[in-house]
Length: 271
Image 1 (tube, rainbow, N blue to C red):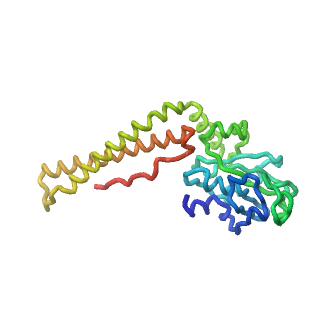
Image 2: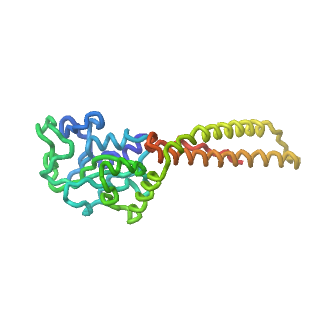
Image 3: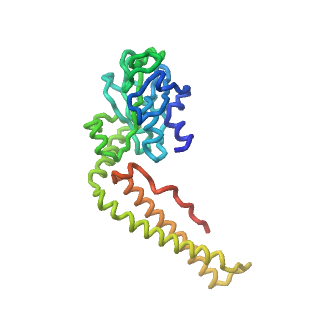
């Protein structure tokens, strides 16, 4: 994940300097946290585990802007110290988890940071009103994990981008539930083999195209041959793009991938 995406979803987007975990939070998830977090006074705090989740848990660039999410959540989080979820962006496949937390409530997972010698509370960091604590990041297709953590994810979803959020999560989880992971995984070698064959064919066609003579006025037969070659090159681009999309879809629906994609798209050769 590049620095731009980290800035978009990480606490730096609040415009606040990072605070050291060991000094001011001391998150108990020692192997799944960053060594820092962020606190925007009277608005929100990011748990060190959240910073880890946003940057290292998934290989995709996660769309989202914490300041915008916090603004969208204002007045919508029940004050019951229960963890809720929301999509990180109107077009995102990822969800952020969070809870409303009172001034006297311990931050989730805080143990004994050196500054306070006891679990940290919002008021310890200079906050004067209840806060949002951003806890973690989840993949919308990871239906089993969402149910494990939230039991009934749809009841924990706050639709900050519109009521369509609930339908989107339902559709993602339903697709995952209906998928046959082993059947999908078995398709991967054939798809990759087909892609390699197409790429080899395209490479040969491009080489032939580059060797074609050029004339100020192209003979009809050569012009037609060149057009057929260019059309086939573009058709192969489309076929490869479909294979990449299918591989990406398999990645969404199989447990071993956790959202991995097939890599950057190839740039089409233009006529």
